Length: 255
Image 1 (tube, rainbow, N blue to C red):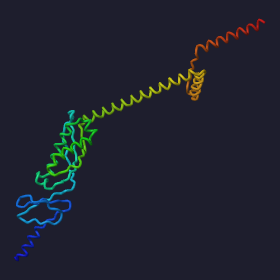
Image 2: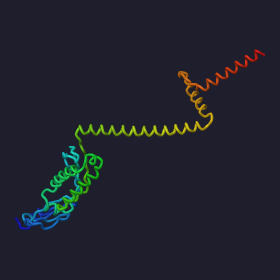
Image 3: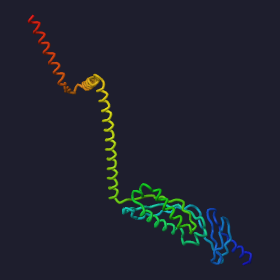
Image 4: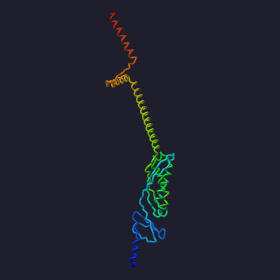
């Protein structure tokens, strides 16, 4: 076989393509010799080798992790982590299988973060807990050339017994708010009634007019039976008028 053809074949198999979203880590005789930029690059067979590193943002789904909160409540938590490789050489030289390492680191960090907060904090301050997890993973993975962009807690699963306890607690809280609102309403109503009574007593005849108005409102429905209590003073006044009339009639007769 002609030498030119052999050289052409060696050159052809030496051409490697690095995509735009990748970088290549080149090794010569087993030693790191540089970064291969996107495009066609030469890698001499036998003497040289390379590893491609994807620089795009990756999403790692962290499986359910059983953890115990600060107040000794067992929960199951899963999350998703978004990260990308910043330094391709560190991702290859600094750690073996960086995608697997970041997943294991996330699982351990998530369990530790859940154990450092109470259940109420975990449920009400999910974003804060997620940010704490992100910071810890970002610092730990920095020697690997990895930047953690975001961590999201997807789901927090509670035991069935704890769900019932939380439900009863929420119901008791709603009942408490209802009683408070009712008491405040009664307080306002009592205050308004006291002011109305004071206004009626201050005006001559206002109380009698209000009584007549109430009777008129009640009598609009024929099915109602009205029991009207007449003050004793009024009855005595009628009795006095009756006696005076009898005396007048007797006096007229004697004349």
